[in-house]
Length: 560
Image 1 (cartoon, rainbow, N blue to C red):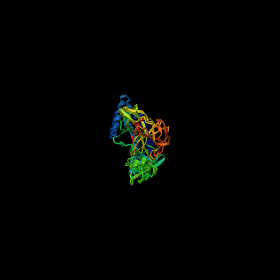
Image 2: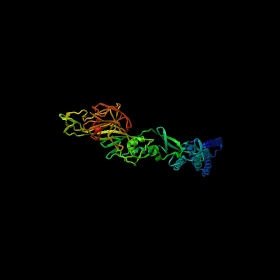
Image 3: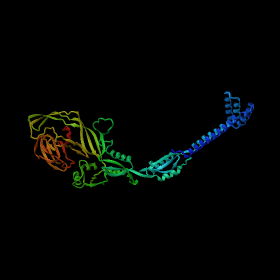
Image 4: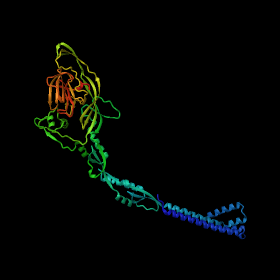
């Protein structure tokens, strides 16, 4: 804060005047007292002195009544102190002179105090406005500048509603000063400041796996876009009838059969947001950028079914997965297509893919075991039921991982037996034909891991289970006779074993076949090597159990 320089000068001058007046009055009083005391013989008698003094007091009191009262009080004090008669008379005679000196001192004091108050009353606080350390002008109140900055920000927002604009108002500073009759110019300062302020556009650049893909208004807009893309694959509605989707909550909830719970929703790629200075025209519309992220700007590909076409043939011709065809054309059921139908073969290449992990709970049947009572009088293959068997029930919990809605992996989490199966008891002949199955299957792969389960997949029934393992040897699941060992476009290299008890097993996508048609195999015999032939997306074993000609869920026969 700055103090007006002339104020000190005025105070000094007033102090000097006060001292000068006091000194002059004191000299006058001292001289008169000395003169009075040196001329005692000229003292008038008491009555005359009092009479003259009273006349003077009365005359003077018309102008200064307070002087008369003050002087009278002083004389009364002298009288009570028993002063000499002559001295008392002199004091009464000169009391007007003493009153006059006191009045002069009072005037000097009033002048001093009045001058200081005048300076203070005319001292004004003003505020110097600076932009980047350059003085712009002087205003009377900081609020003037604050209101101006707010108005300028609103003005820019209205001019560029779809762009985040930044105004350099943070570089405006104020310094206060107190000065005598200081001047300010609010309007002139604001006009000048308006011409000096600068604005520029700021946006966020969306970077996916290190590659810039677009520019949006701000981070909030980008987060809203991300939520919109994720919501398409993590909605609260189940795709399968009778299935209820339960979103994860703060308190864990035990899922029941038929329910599912979304565990995770995330992007496969690394996503970054980088604030940058931009040209306002560079900001993209949210819907345009969303389409680019989800489709990769790929143009649709259509194909018209020709004579002799099949789903696998078309997939192989265009080097795409059958899964793409099923997904793009949900009307295809059991691979039934007709000449002239148009098929969508568009393979999207999204810049941003959504990975979801969903916990699913299902009830699955447990196949009952069969106990055989051997009868050597009955030919093998002839049986008689003693006790009917009954399937059990188990609650299976597993995680399903999907990318953009397409299943990539199934992970078994737990199994809980709800109802134990009832064993069947059957009498049969002991004349066993070599290769007849036991009716109880073993794992075809050691240390197997389930990668895809049995059930509907992409509009088509997945007739078996997909198994992976570090041990690639494939073994017969039960005794039987090899009835097929060869290659087809869908199963690739595969083997079919007839267990001669109403069951068959199929082993698909093998890289090598170690048996031939007609060979009798025992449970646990090596029959081939795991591979990725035919319509396969990776090294695994496709394993089926067929009862008659109907595929069964292998989980009924195997303990996962």
